[in-house]
Length: 262
Image 1 (cartoon, rainbow, N blue to C red):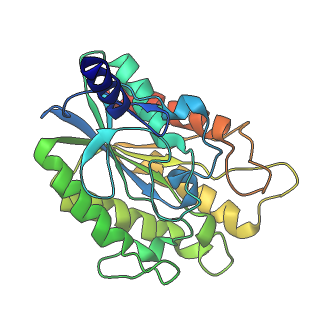
Image 2 (cartoon, helix red, strand yellow):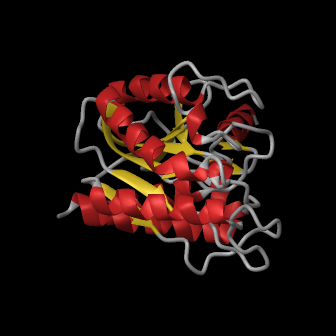
């Protein structure tokens, strides 16, 4: 009976909140990816059972700076964090690179404008310091791997007539600052397109942000534009549904793999 109880306890320790967790520690040679931006990177999709099943080679750097199996919600910017594109990206890269272990670093902050992604700036809505925290978390994660790219999904908060015209200059500066911080002038940077959802035409400000995304990707080396064409919102005309977020994540992976293998 005692043996049975011990076995039951051991099995239970591997299952937390319905999650089947991988055993062991994350490897020392992780392929690292920084997830940055605002709520559509953090994820607001409804978490499904499939989002809670661990993959043995896909890890995430949690709020406490520990490597744990990557399950949703990955982000912790707000209590409403849900399914986003990051995990699907990691799974797709792991499938394409069967010998690689993937380490995802969640740093997105819902609602944050691009001006919040500067040194020392506090995003007043949550009290977060998006830039400072992203840099610190990523450098801590880099003790266990190599940074291979940055996934950026942001711009909704800058899609106004006042911020839109300034967005391209700010985005170019952001990319240069990220690359300088991590000592890699060719660090891949992937820009996700804003969602164009039924019933909500883009404003002039959104069009300016989209044009900036496309132009920067076309002109700055090792930057790619990731289309959101055909993707759907979760019903709020703002955030991708979980299914569309997963599709977007796979598109990010395709863009990175094209860049990494050529």
